Image 1 (cartoon, rainbow over the protein chains, first blue to last red):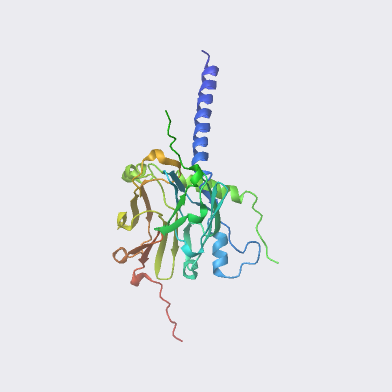
Image 2: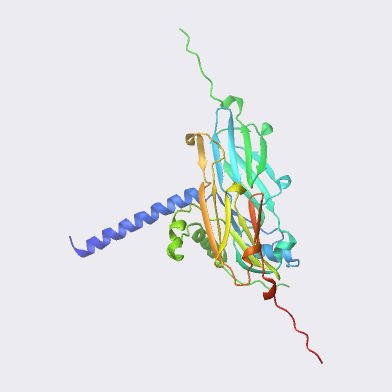
Length: 166
Length: 148
């Protein structure tokens, strides 16, 4: 085999491994990677909080786990530092939509920043659900920065055991 | 009218930075501790700022029990490590979507000489860890009055 063919094959293999890594990254992160918007964008920056919001990271990772039990769908969403009262949770079709805002305290904007990685501002995260759920019977709790939402399945989508008659 | 700097690639660069950080293992750059970094499963996002009399660090650690977090300062290097354990005992096969990373995290920062290692305090609320490191009193800048 000529050297050129070997190089070509090596490149092809390298490309395949990059493409595979990229596919995995996309699967894992595309949904969790969430845009955080400062509330007052485009306007003049007046307060220290507004300046802070513009400088802070515009992307945050809100990772979600969805598990399906016999009667309900369980969603856990990592959303640190929020006020649970201000969360807006909705079910639109087969998608769970969580809207919220990570607020900045004035004391947090003081001093000189060396590292700014945390995201602040308002966000919207959509989580696809595996089955239809009854949003009126949903329950949510917030603990240690994780939002836990329990969504009962709609009666029609619950598995039904059909008796075979003789 | 306010002037805004034209940065057409700003958003893309920021995204790139975030992804870099996510997959950042920085092998070798910490010498003997690289083994610890290699075994860490995720990296929390942090804010670090300096105030007149102290340093304040905020780290996003959602779903981590405060008991499982260890904050440690040695030779001017502050290290934060801990572990996110699974909350439910359900079987993995019931999961339809798994984005959250379980397991250990580890990060370390070298602090300036003014940091007072003896007086560090840390607290955790709603998945945000706050570490306060006061500066040593004698090293705080003092304004000297000029006599006339």
